[in-house]
Length: 389
Image 1 (tube, rainbow, N blue to C red):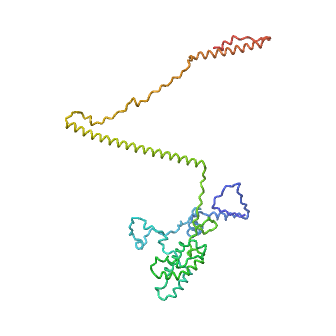
Image 2: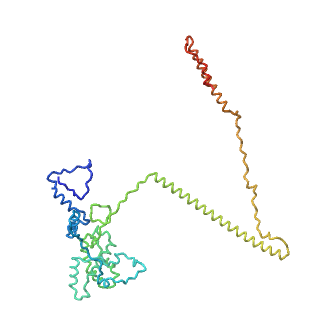
């Protein structure tokens, strides 16, 4: 098996999942050829087809020889000189530029400004020469621009009035039904040319099986068809987002909370509006009262009634503190049983007494078990007092 890899690629690690190449002795190149190949395979940074360029190879060989220790003249790749000024620069490049106020000149589409999209082909050109051969004067001959415009009008009218003509070509409209499409042209020759061109256009559209004569981009029609390579602008398939009941419940709960917060904010705003309106009415009443008191004060001065200026001040009634006072609530005191106070010394004495009683009971049971037996061991009951308190 011949080695298909190249020396310029990095050798990968051996994997147990991939098979190794079997190289025979005849497939192994000689040492000199291997060295020569390694010398030639230098990363040049250019495309593969341009590596054999004369100046590039000369520069590479010179750099390799200099790296090996040989004395060679340094070679450069020739590049065009861009430091000089072109003599005819001012002739072709003028500096008369006025910055526009806006970059948008118009908002029409490319189709609206490109002109008539219909183009003559060989069949149309032969038909045009045929009808022009019968005309003697140049004014009566149909030009190529007029022919293209008439054909485009037929195509546009049939696309609007019979968009599904490809299903049944025999139902194509007559010239009398399509004549209204040329009403925008004031020149009478357009109608005459349209009558002459209509049979040619009808024949061609029947040959196209009801499809437009001018070829256009093919779009997806109906179901998606990946087998047709000429389909342009395919629909992109979006992956449906997986929805769960939990996410639906969370979304519903968030919507409920949001609705409750919005309702609370609206209610609070309505209450604030009512409060401010009441304040406005209260201030208006105070102002009216002050004006009435001023009139009363002037009347008292005219009548000679003496008094202080307290009449001008509105004395508001202070709320009674007793009425607004919250009545005190008496809490029932729980009855706690009387328990004697226990000291730590009493607890220690009870514990020592319990220990002594347990020891005495164990000794009594031991004596009862030793009845009828003689014990020759020394009795050291006197030592028990050491472990007591």
